[in-house]
Amino acid sequence: MSDTSEHQVVHLWSLDEDVAVVPGDGETETVLSGRWGVQRLRVDGYGLVREALRRMQLGPVRLSNVEHPPGTGGGVPPDRILLPALRQVAHLVVRTLAMDDLVGPLLSVYPLSPKAAFTLVGLPVRRLRLVLGASLVVRTEGVVLETPTSPYRVVVHRPEAFWVIGMLARPCLLEDAVAALPLPPGVTRGVIGYLRAAGMAVPVDPVRPPRDDARTGPPR
Image (cartoon, rainbow, N blue to C red; front, side):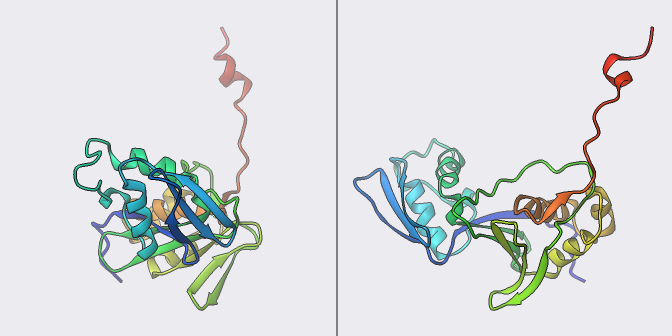
């Protein structure tokens, strides 16, 4: 069993392997070509988005490690420029969750639809489980978690991610999974968050409306 007690999650971004990036018209446009055609992307005047896309073609990167070209835009935080631009091409972006132990990524989420828009959201307090119809399949790229209803496929890279997936085979509260697994809480929450955003994990308990006495307060 790996010693993961002190490790934290790392969020990585890359372009799908069939995406090509070429210059567009002028200094403020870049063109991305992929399986769903061509998309023109307006980029910042500092070259930061182009540098991020260039690095994302080579493999997963941390956005915080992408730096402004020397002498340009150094006072603007990279996230404020990169995140809005990358949201426009979310269907071409692979999102990868890793730990800072240098062993390798935990899992990667690949888009399968031009409507894919991977967004991390707050995790519910209700129980979660794998969506019905989800399956683990061995493919050339590794072990893949997939379902007919999701616009993503999840490639599982490490056993720690399998541990979390196994907890969701039955309805499970997030904090129960955190308590049961020998992983840092942030890692378990991170894996579940990625599965939730990819449509692989869903709440199973209905949302209960507030009771009348909770809305109106105690009787007087």
